Length: 412
Image (cartoon, rainbow, N blue to C red; front, side):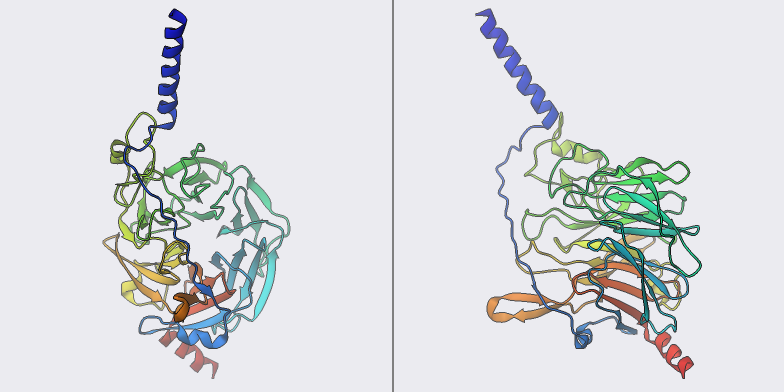
C-alpha cells in the first residue's frame, strides 16, 4: 500500500513539474483556421509601371530590372546602390553615373555568402549577415569590396522559418541584429530568437536588447528622438483579421508579447499558459504596440526619411514600410509601400505611398493578381526612394517631380 501511495505522489509531482515547465493548456476551446490564398503571379512588363500610383508631386520609374530576387538595399556614394540577394548568396553593386535614377553599371561585389540578407556600412566597412553569420568587408575607393571578408560572429540562432536577419548601427554606435522566431507559432527555448540583439563593435559580444518580437525585419531610428522603431509580423493561422501587424517602439529590456499576446496585450487564447503563470498576468508586464495595422500584410523593409534632401518638409519624421503581401487571408492584402506617419516622435497612422502591384486579375476565378512584392527600401541623402521587388527582380526609383525636371534641364 505504501508503495502505491508513494507512486501516486511521485506521479502527481511529475505532472505538476511538467506543467510548471511547459505551462497549463488553455482553458477555452479554440479553433485554428488556416486560410491559404495566393495572388496570381504576373511577370513584369515595362508598361506595367504605368499601373503604379504615388502621391501627388512624386513619380516612379524603373531603375533596374532582371535582377532575380533582390532583397535589402543600402545606398553608397557616387550614385551606388548595394543589393543583397538571399537566394543567390551574393551582393550586387549598381551605379547611376549620370544621376537620372536609372542604373547603367552592375557588378557582383560578394558572390560566396549563402543566404546573405542584412546589410549596412560604417567607417569604410560593409557589414553583411545571413541567418547565423555576421561578416564585414573592406570597401574600396571604387565601391567594390575586398574579396576576403572577416567573420565576426558565426553562432547566431538557426534561421528556421524566418532566416531574414537584418542589421544596422544605432546612434549609440552599437550594432543591432533582428532575429525572427524559428517557426510560425512556437515558444522558443533559445532566448535570442524572436528578439533584437545588441552587439558591441569593440568586442563583438552581444546582449539581448528586446524580446517577444516575432519577426521584426524592418527597423530604424527616429531622426529626431533617436529612438528605435520596428514593424513586427503577426502570426499566421489565426484567422483573416488577427493578429495585427505591429508598429513598435523598441526599448531596452522590453518584452513585446510573442508568443502569448499580440498588439495592445491581446492574449492569444490558443496558446498554453507560460510556466508558473497565466497569459493574462504575464502580458501585464509586456510592452503594447504603438500602432496596429491589418493582419497578414507581411512587413519587410522600413526606413525613416530623416534629413534627406528634396522631400516635402512634413515627410522628414515619417517612415516607409514595404508590405510584401499576404498568403494567409481570403482577400489578398499588402503588396504595396505605405508611409507611417509620426507626430511628436510617435507613430499615429499609415497612408499609401506606392500602390498598384495588386490588380483585379481573373474575376471568374475570384482571384487577384500581382506583379510585384515590395521587399527592401532605402532613401538616399538626395531624397531618392529605392524599392526592391523580389518577385520580379525590379528596383523602382521614386522621386519628387521637381528633382527629375532639374536633372533633365541640366542634361540639356
